[in-house]
Image (tube, rainbow, N blue to C red; front, side, top):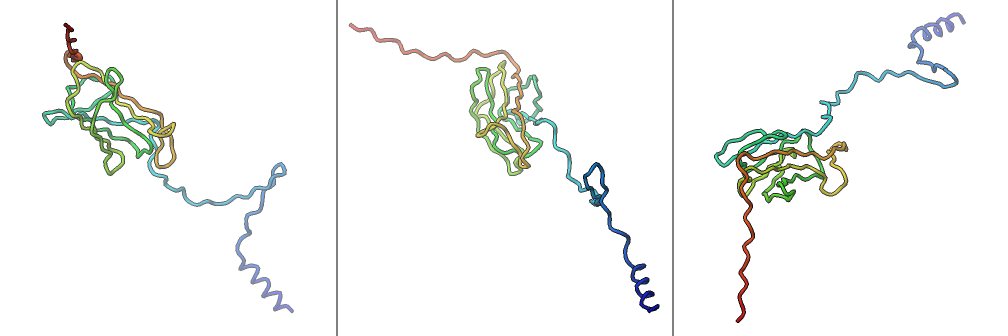
Length: 175
């Protein structure tokens, strides 16, 4: 009988430490667990949508475009986004808030948007680059984050050129 108690004693001594017991506080049972090391979630998302815009000129040169800047007459714009967006469009508006015609392409990286303009922008005029939602009410990204619309206003250096007037056909006089 003594050997049975000895075996039981050895088995109890070999058992692991006690499991965590619930701590009762104000009638609520809580159990503490070790979650292990923290998981790297990657770089933090930008707090606001800040795109980088580069203007391309007829001579092959380029220049960054910042808010309220004055640049030479550009023939193209490249917009680099900080994050890959969904359901968005980028448009260039002229001083009358009319869309400027362009040949646009979203590059394979999903973050670079290239606008090729058929003719240089008009000197002395103001333009606004606008990023907004294309189909839905708000711009979203791949992770489900939402972004406010974004605008960048700039001006083309030089004197304002008058707009061509519409030619009127002279009325034929009746005899």
